[in-house]
Amino acid sequence: MKILITGICGFVGSTLAKAWRAAEPGLLIYGIDSLIRPGSESNRIDLQKLGITLFHGDIRVASDFEALPPVDWVVDAAANPSVLAGTDGRTSSRQVVEHNLLGTVNILEYCRKYRAGLILLSTSRVYSVRALAGISVKIHGEAFRLDDNVPFPSGLSNDGVNEYFSTTPPISLYGSTKLASETLALEYGDIFDFPVWINRCGVLGGAGQFGRVDQGIFSYWINAYLRRQPLSYIGFGGRGYQVRDCFHPRDLLPLLQKQTQSERGAAVNVCNVGGGVHNAMSLAELSNWCAARFGHHPVRSELATRRFDIPWLVMDCTRARDVWGWCPEVGIQEILEEIASHAEQHPHWLELSGVT
Image (cartoon, rainbow, N blue to C red; front, top):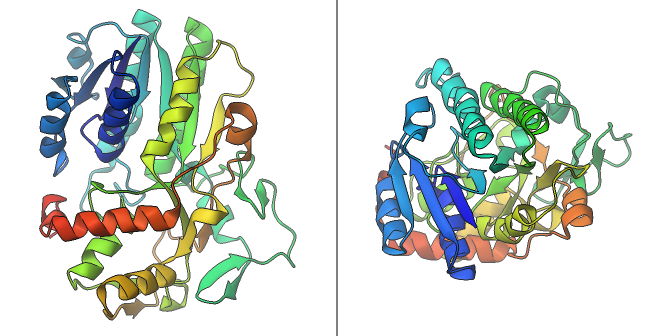
C-alpha cells in the first residue's frame, strides 16, 4: 500500500509518518509540504532519514500535484489550523480559504485521478461558536464543568460534544473552510467512487508540537511557563477556567490503519476524535501543573473575551468507539510530561516555532 500525507512536515503529519513507518516498515509513504511554517524544515530532515519520500510543494497549486506518484490513500494533514486566521489583522482571509478549501479541491482532484481514498483530518472548530458559547457551565474547583441542571442542546451530553451538535455559523473562517472541505470531500467520494473518512480532531498535543498560542495551546503554555514568558487568562472572568480536551497524534494511527483497510460505502463517514472528558483540563489547572513541575510563574488576567473564544469544548468520541473500536490511549498527564521534557531539552523552541 502507498500513502500520501499532505502537510507531512507539520506536527501531526510528521508524527503520523514516523509512527506509521515504525509500525509498518514495508509501507510506502510519500509526503508533500510547502515548508512555510517555522520549524517544519527540521522535521523534513528527520523524515528523509527514515526513507520517506518528500515533495516540496504547495497544495494550493494544482501543478504541484503533477509530480506526485499514484497512491492508494491520502491523509490530509495540511491546513492553516488557527481559529483566529484571517481575522487577527496579521493574516490574510484569502490565504485561509486558499489553504483550507482550495487546497482540498486540488487534493480531491488528485484522489479522483488515481481513485485514491481520502482521510481528511478536520477539526472540532466546525461546531457553532454561538452554540458552544451558549453552553451552560458552572465552576468546579478551578475549571468550568457542564451545568447538568440546565437541559443540554442537541449534540451535547456529559461525554461532550458529538457529531449532531450545531454547525450553524458563526464558526470562524478556519472552521467554515474545514466544514466546506468535509462536504466537498463527501461529494467527490460519492460521485467519483472513492472512499472518504472524516475525523474531526480535538486539540492535539505532544513533544515536537510547534508552540504557538493559536495552534498548540498546551505546548505553547508549557514552553512559555518554563521560560517565564508573559501569559494571560483571556476572558471568562480572567481566571483561566475555560476547558479543552487533548490527545496525542500517535493515537490517530490505529484509527487510520483501520480506515485504510476498510470497505467502501460505510454508512458513517464522520467521527469525532479527541481526548474526551478524561483528558480535559482548564488553563488554570494547566498552570497548576506547570507550577508543580517548574515552580510558580504569575499569569495575568484579561477580562475581554475574544471573538471565537469558548468556555468549554470536550469531544465525545462515542461514535469512533462504536464504529472503529477507537479510543485515546495516551493520557493527558503523559502528554504534558512529554511536552515538558521536550521543552527542557529545546530551550529555543518558542523561537523555532515562530513566536516572537
